[in-house]
Image (cartoon, rainbow, N blue to C red; front, side, top):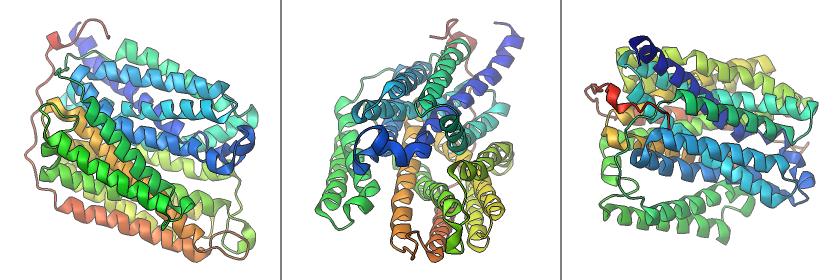
Length: 476
């Protein structure tokens, strides 16, 4: 491999990985345009149809920390390719599904593919030259928002133009294209540290996360004071505590909790919960406000497709601000960059609180909030990777992604509770409920700022470049 090829390859790899991040995150919002039709399409109840969305979030939450650790053990490129395979298979299963069970299987496989994200971010640290690393991580982090933002209008357009199965065939085509790109352009770096897979630890973690997150995400539906909700959350927490003690006793744990307990890592993960909460709140509240009937006096009467188009620029703003995040990290450090991003996110919610009387006003507010997400999301994995050994980077970034997922799941539950708890005469949430949601989102973002302020400054790690002999001639 000559110098020109070696210089160009990292950039091509970053492009492929960013495309992968966008593709994987896009699948999270694919079913929203048909969510209300799922009971009829799958011949099931409304409650059962809700699991089509929930199971994807649960599978993603479980997959991210586990795939991160597997990337450290077996090599990141291999785990990335497996994640893409899961996405392809899941999309194909959903594409032929006409009943609930195969749809849930396919959606679970799509959720498991979210393990692509932390492993890809950790790999970027290894394969990019120092001057490109911050930009690459920032761009990768931004694609998460871009995929989610464009997923809604894109899938709404596909459903209206073709049929509801077409959205999954589209996802399968994107995933297959990604598989080719990963195989050809993502180098197999000899970064596997070896070790055994902690199957018991993975099982306990999965059980604890699923129980807790089901309790939180379904709390409004089950009733927050119901035995089922309390039992799920309490049982999940107990399992996670037992998992923690089990992991501390292992020589090769799934997650090194001693590393996770380091102050920079722990505080960054706590900030991830708050900022993930703030990011998700607008994704739930703004579309509902856009689609609320005009007869309420505050609803904006937009269709699903129109609401998606008003939200889509936010994803582009995230991508546009990724270079800003890169420059801020280079000049000010990841800690200050994360604080700036969370502050901008909070300001976006405050703008929404005062400007919610026209679609263009919500476009401005959501764009400001999205800029904050674009700036802040890139800084979190950078902070994490600066505080852990390179051999544990995948696992550490996976846990950080999990904490963001906890924040987004909690936000969905809280926003649903607030909106449903204040219903007006026309059967839709009141204006005050929307305003309260915006204030809660702002508070969550500014709490993230306060937590990040407590993260100790770390000396910049000097990352040793990957030696040529560490790159395999074949990508797999």
